[in-house]
Image (cartoon, protein in one colour):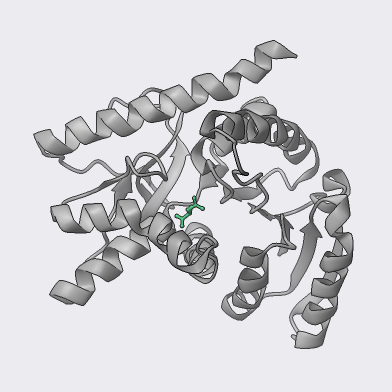
Length: 293
Ligand code: LMR
C-alpha cells in the first residue's frame, strides 16, 4: 500500500506515521510531501521512520513535488493546509487553501492509482475536499472524504465517560462549530462544538495526537473488507437528506452501502440547515478564486 501524506513535516504527521505503521501491517511505501522550506525537517522525519525498523515498510521518500510523490498512491492524506495567521480572516484562509487544493486535485487525478482514497484533514477540511474534487474535474468525487472522525470520537468518548458504552455515534455537516451530533444531549453537542478550540487554548496548538488517531480509525474503516459504518464527509450528490448536491458534507456512511438514512428530529433538521448554509457560504467564497484568475 503506497500512502502519500502532504504537510507531513508538521506535528500531526509526526504523530500519525507511527500509528499508520502499527495499524496497517501490510507492505507499505510512504511518500512524504511538504513545502520546499520544510525539506530538511522532512529528511529528519524520513531518517526516524527508517530507524523504526519495521519489516513491512518497503520504502520511504520525501520531497515537495506532488506529481512525483502521488504517483501510483493508493491512499493520500492531505494534512497540509495554510493555518490562520495573525490578522487573517477565515475567508482569506478559505481562498488561499482553495487554490492549493484545486491544484492538488488536478495532480491527484492525473497521477495517483485510479482507485485512490484521499482523506482531507487540513482545515477548512470539507471545503478543501470539495476543491480537491473540483480540481480533478469530479473524476474522484466518490474517492475523496474529509475527516469527521475526530468529532465522532470526541462525541463517543464524552457520551461513554458519562453513560457507559454506546453504539456508533454519527455527526453531520461541517467540521466546525455548526456540526450536528445525532441524538446527542445538548451538553455533548456543545462539548464537541467547542473541543477543538478548547485544545488550542490549552496547548497553544490544535489537536495532533487525537487527530492522528482519528485518521487511522477513519482509514481502517474505509478500506476494511467487512462492512463498517462511521461518520465521513463525502460528496453530497444524491444524498437522502435533501442537502445541496455539490458539497462535502458529513453523513453516517457505510464503506459498502454509502450514506445511511437515519430519522432526524425537527430540531436536528433545523441544525442541519444551519451547517449546510455555512458550507454553501464557504463554497461560494472558495469559488471566487475560480473567477478571479
Ligand atoms: C480540531 O477539531 O481540533 C481542529 O480542526 C481545530 C482547528 O481549527 O485546528
